[in-house]
Amino acid sequence: MKNEKMKYATGFWDQFTLRGMIIGAVGSVILTCSSMFVALKISSLPWPIMFVALVSMFGLKLFGNTNYNEINVTHTAMSAGAMVAGGLAFTIPGIWMLDPSAEVNFVQLIVITVGGVLLGLIFTAMLRKHFIEKAALPYAMGQAAAETVKVGDEGGKKARWLFGSLGISAVFTWLRDKMLVIPSMLINQNILTTYGSNFGIWLSPMLISVGYIVGPLYVGVWFLGALIGDVGILIGGQASGLLDGATAAAIKNSLGLGMMVGCGLGIFVKEILPRAKALFGPLFSKKSAGDCIIPMQWAPIVVALIAVAFTFLLDLGIVASIITILGCWLATTMSCQCVGLSGINPMEVFGILVLLIAKAVTGIDGTAAFYVAAVVAVASGLTGDVMNDFRSGYILHSDPKAQWLAEVIGGLVGAFVSVGVLAIILTAYGGEAFGSEMFPAAQAAAVASMVGGIAHLPAFIFGLIVAMVLYIIGLPVTTLGLGVYLPFYLSATAFLGGALRFILSKVAPKVEKSGKDNIIAAGALGGEGVIGVVIALIMAISVIQG
Image 1 (cartoon, one colour):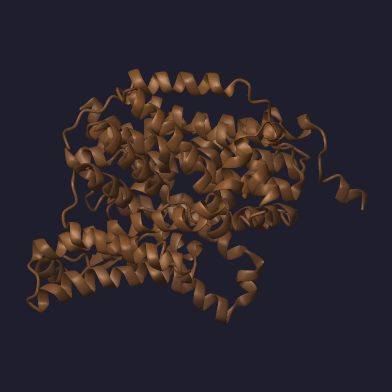
Image 2 (image 1 turned 90 degrees about the vertical axis):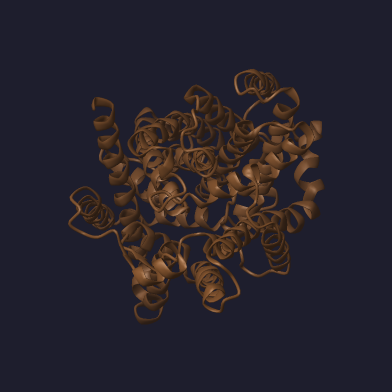
């Protein structure tokens, strides 16, 4: 019993430590780099919390004794930058999809990421107590991370599994993408030439791991969307003579985009509106001041400064800036609710909803609309991720103030690093890479469609209505539109990971129960993501020097 008590820390400085924040900041840099590449490459971003919990635990143990709470606070800092990268990757590349030669001011992108992070910090400080303690939403990933930390005192076995799979994935990626001795994809060229469908698989440890982590249900729905989009519309529509190639592609893409937006509206109608009083009421009550993690007297001043920065540095104008900030408030609340109940955080959909409001009210131009969506996506992405950490901290009895300060460090690190990585990728591959097979970036394409016009409006509206209704009646359709929109080879590869998990759960349930499978999957995902950024960095340096 004495040994068990020593695993917890009650003092603030035993949880929020210098070594923990150094490890957390370095980890945030690495994870932000990896997440930007993953988000652009496979249009998906699995929760990093399991990976960072393990890395934080192993890293702190190298420096001597640690405790559950120091590990928890450290992994809060480490994970914060990942979803900041996701918010940027899921929105801004749409600018180059509409115009590959577009010039983007990277100082403005810093304003977007820092502004989104600051708004996310403010709203998580306000919303944590309601969702974690009062509403007590499950936040399954946060619970799993807490259990991982508790059982992590088994020695170095888990570390070997994690870093072993990371190393193998990294070597494979280097041989595939840099040395070119392994093909990237296996594509049926006849179907590609005849119907324009990328019918095949991508040889990717990262995407197989994504499918494994997401699980067979949502990956199965994802693959069903791919069958509808490619086999049903692209191939079936043309083979039957009902559609020509251009029309089939327009219907496929617009239907998928409509379904993604429809799921976002379904979340709003089903999860937010019925709980509006409970969610927003306490924030306007003086009695709720104690619900915040820290005193918030400074928050109105910061929000006012953010509004000024958005108005003049992003050229949004005062009305669009206010709509953006209020939209972040709504979107972060939706993100807390959605992640807590389903584990899904459609941050780019929240960004689309706010940009549509801003365009309708103010008539902002295309680039400004992307900026609005990016701010909202960054804020809601950060919030959704950190609420998982807060749930883990609640179970482990961590000091929420220590966690929030760790979020400040990791989030701001992610704000600057994500913009730097995007600049490196843009320099290495050019604007035409976004929206191509190299970086499909489906979420950014959805934002671009809202800004630049929808190719087939009836298909979009149909997909929106169908997905919204299906979500409201309780069907797991959050990944259906993603499958319809994405190239088939991405969906098929993710499906292999989900199928592998399903088979393993039947033939070797002990392996799944031990957690080794998730550790290996997390390492494989991280290895390819990190090496992808390294290769892009090498190419960027070559371009600059050349």
